[in-house]
Amino acid sequence: AGATLGYVREELKKQQALAKLEEALARKRVADVRAELEDIFSELYDRLAANRRRIKLLDSSARDYPELAALWFEGARGGFVALFARYLELRTAKGHLGPFPDLRAAARFALETTVFWAVHRHFDLRPERITEELARDSAILFVVRALSKE
Image (cartoon, rainbow, N blue to C red; front, side, top):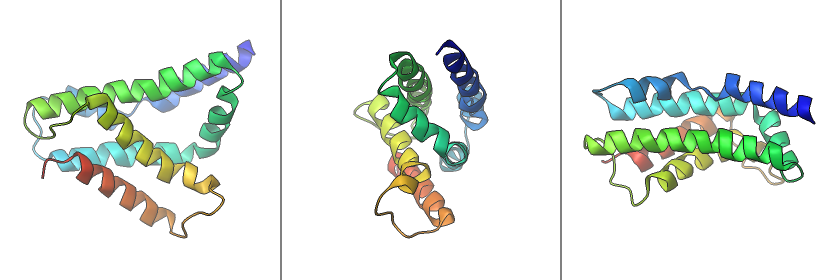
C-alpha cells in the first residue's frame, strides 16, 4: 500500500503540472484571453487523454482506499480547481472573463467537461460516435466559450 501511494504521488507530481496554466498565472497582461484559454485546455485535454486508463483506475480504486482518494480528489483534482479558480479570479478582475457566481464551481465545471470528453466517454457503454479530434476540438471550444465574456 505504501509503495503504491508513493508511486501515485510521484506520477501525479509529474503529470499534474500544466505549463500553460502556470504561464498564464504568471502573466500580468494578456492580449487574447480566448487563445490563452485554448492553450490551457488543449494542454489539459491532451494530458487527460494520454492518461485516461490511469485516471479511470484511480477513480475506481479511490472508493476503496481513502489515502488514494485524498491524493486523487483533494490533491490532483482539487489542485487544478484551486489553480484554475485563481486564474479566473485574476482574469475576471482585469475584465477579461466573468463574472462568475462562484469561481471554484466555474473551474470545476470546466475541468469536468474536459474530463468527460477526454476520459470518461471512452468507457461509456453507449458512446457518441465521434472522432477523437472532433471530441477534443468541441470540448475545448465549449469550455472556452462558456468562460469567455463575449
